[in-house]
Image (cartoon, rainbow, N blue to C red; front, side):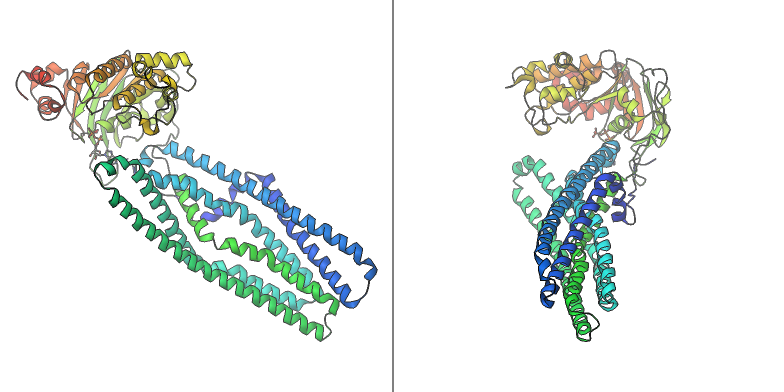
Amino acid sequence: MSAQTTDVVPARPILALIPMVFGRPVLAALTLLSGLLSHGLGVAAAAVGAWMVGTAITGSGAGSLSTTFWMLVVLVVAAALARWWQMWVAHDLAYRLLAIMRVRLFDGLERRAPGYLLGRRSGDLAGTVMADVETTEWFYAHTIIDYAVAALVAVISTAVLAVFHPLPALVVAVFLILLATVPVWLARVADEQGRKLREELGVLGAEVVDGVQGMRELVTFGRGEDYARRLRERTRTLQASQLAYGRRSGVEQAVTDGLVAGGFTSVLVVAAVLVASGDVPLPLLPAVVILAVSAFGPVIEVTGTARALGQIRAASRRIFAVSRQRPIVDDGDARAPEQPLTAHVEFRDVRFSYSPDAAPALDGARFEVRPGETVALVGHSGAGKSTCAHLLLRFWDAGAGAVTIGGRDLRTLPQQYIREMVAIVPQDVYLFNRSVKENIRLGRPDATDDEVVEAARQARVDEFADQLPDGYDTVCGERGAQLSGGQRQRIAIARALLRDCPILILDEAVSNLDAENEEALQAAVRAVRQGRTTLLIAHRLSTIRSADRIVVLDRGRVAETGSHDELVAEGGAYVRLLARQVGGMVDGSDEDEITGRPV
Ligand SMILES: Nc1ncnc2c1ncn2[C@@H]1O[C@H](COP(=O)(O)OP(=O)(O)OP(=O)(O)O)[C@@H](O)[C@H]1O
């Protein structure tokens, strides 16, 4: 099986956003109620105002004007309060849904990592989790329920208008329908522009993150100006997309304004003609006008947010492209074993490629690591060593053959179970911008301080932690920037010690360390290997020689297996590898030890 994945974006991504609202039924109902109240009270206030004007025109009922005035005051205040309440609950609903969406997205990313993440840019993904999700706030706070309110208020106002006379009601209905269709006319263009705009934003975000992370390299090689030029170009492209979006949005606004003005004028003309012909009594004219305004009001409001639909659609498409991505590895009906498995690892004729059109990274690899044994995996760059580690962690599944632990095919074991069996000390250790102690505790969050300190002592972290400004509470800096490579690896070893898994993958750092760091790291490695089945991706001769057995990988296959002395005696792939690759990493004294001849 390859690592290819498929995007599963719904055909109508905006509609797919709706079900989340049903997860908060009370808040959704309150938003709807507050919207109806706010618009209803507004219409009532306007109707009472219209009645007052009508009464003033005819001069009838002057005695009741003061009561009506106070009624109007109460209605206006109540409408304002209802509006405030509507904004509150609508945003409460929206921000709760946004928070849920972000957590789900992050959970999804975690389940799909690292296979899925390798193919995506972190800045772009961060853009989806933050900015794209934020864009849906328009939808949840200002669109979905507002649409329902606008439709209800428009229908009710038009129906009441029809009671006075059907003609103005018909005019209002025609213009309302035309108004509601404006976003539809330009939907395709809006969609395409929205997609481009969100993508450009994602790319720019990714470029910025890339540049910030690689700032040291940019400065070292004097490429800062190149990077700035690249950003300027990207910004210009984004600006062009924003302008195009703004222009189309402006056209929508102009058409909407035109239709609203046309609608009002037409209603006024029709009402005036009806009053002149005596079909509608003069005192009812203000009420007719007010009802027409009431029907248009909420619709005008939603056409404002409808102009953002292009971006909302594009943002939701990007969100679903992440959240509905099928996991590269699926637990399916995998079950944890009833009895603990022995820590015996086997690669049984494993074939694997990262994508269907890529050459196999493993091409029938066959070897084992017996319980408690340390096997060093060596080979040229690209031979498939890290791929073995990825498959043993079940980041990907073998295409053919099988990787087994205690005789069980990993595909039949839940990923969570495998994570409890296998720990890794990677070459490029990632440290979070938290304290040394917290970074070690990542291995087992419920570990006590004493356990953390004991793991740190065994991994020789104490030797440098004591000299840090705040000891174990010193913050490591982003990616552990304030520590050396060897120190970071020792923290990773402490994590693994704390995790206490029976199987360990140790990916040795390639970089050279000073003698003191090297000695401390080797001591930490010895501590963590103790009693564990260890697969050692080794680069240093001293480490390779410390293994019980050595497996030489060559283009995804096992070329040789044996102890250092056996393989040296054979004089095959291992010796050639040492001569060409490892020899460069060991000091002169080691070179002679290998074969007794110069390498
Ligand atoms: N995520 C990936 N996507 C696609 N191809 C990959 C990926 N990771 C590795 N490969 C390819 O798979 C092959 C084996 O790579 P792998 O990283 O396992 O080699 P390696 O022996 O660990 O090399 P090195 O010592 O340089 O780390 C290489 O051809 C590599 O280009």
